[in-house]
Image (cartoon, rainbow, N blue to C red):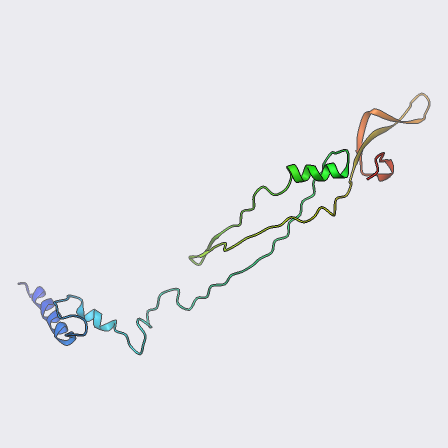
Length: 159
């Protein structure tokens, strides 16, 4: 047996003798280290705690407001609202997750609701172009050349 192995065996033997019944009675190369990790004053590894000890977990509820305005070409207000209900709206909401100092920032719960369509307003109407007859100098409505206008005085259809 080499001198180094004999030294380790003797250290382990001394440790085993000192720890008899406390840790184990079989030959354990790291028995001395196990003595240092005993429970002291009701704590274990108080001087070398896990990195999460002392941290707090918070559930943060955040409200996001979102709005969208659609321009819809329709014959009536109801038809425009139905078009948005059928073809508009939110396709997908994705909340981001990530990491803060190596710890996860996770979505716990989410929800969303639509509001009523009580703010539907007419913004434009396609009307005949107001044209000027070069020969007579009179204004006329050119139904062959329409234009979109937000001028409600020119609108032909009631809301």
